[in-house]
Length: 372
Image 1 (cartoon, rainbow, N blue to C red):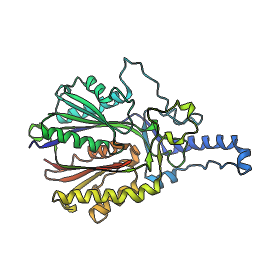
Image 2: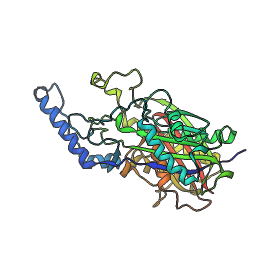
Image 3: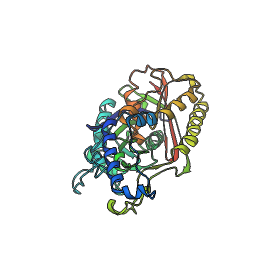
């Protein structure tokens, strides 16, 4: 059987940054405007005032200190509070495809491959710019790649599910050089006017090259095993599908943007993810102490700390469970790949690790890798 490997990775990071201080100022200005407009109803007990946010609240709730975004001005405008992304003409590349291409170029450079060598493109992301044609096919065209391409959406687990699909196709011989790319424009589906979640997401794009290990020409990680799991829950959801109405017609549809029942998610997802990783390790004959690194989904620092401790049976040491959450915020499916891309180059041959993402669905995907 052909042995698949990750031979390159890349991260495209938008230039614009929103700090917690900037976000709090904008949110509080919005809250003050709404509270002033509803002053009579609030005084009569017919409406509740919107509470102010704070930097301490955000850091304590998430561990996030800043986020990169495609458009900063629209998000920080108290009269708007969502990104101002101009529509593009049909003969121009889509924003997602443009972001994806930039991440893929970095991954190809690391893998010492040319775009023309790619014969499989999987656009694995939780927020696709359109239903059809597939964004992946557009990316394939921009790259000048051959073969075939398709989109995949498993929410925050999309990248790891995409890696499993690519690895399986490499094993089967139906692809020889695959790219799994996750362009996440999370800022467009977040409700920036909701204090409970207005700080969670950022924008980014990641890419990994998957190909047969025997054909790798650069340093790489053997994909020793992959495992995916899903269990239905709508505690994390976004009902803004292709049946949505225009933004100015859905002011009363809060569920059309990102929604989360945080307490239930914590209670239900944490044991599911921990058990998933431990079961995967056991099935492959790996011990928790074999792991040099855990590259976890970057959703919440408290969640990651819990999972790391549960899997290792102790508090992770320095560098064992790298977090990028403080700089990037939650970037959905891209988070674990950012952590992998930025914190894997120091590992020596034989070092083992697990890439794991989890999220809406519920879904969990894990990839056991070993430095070649």
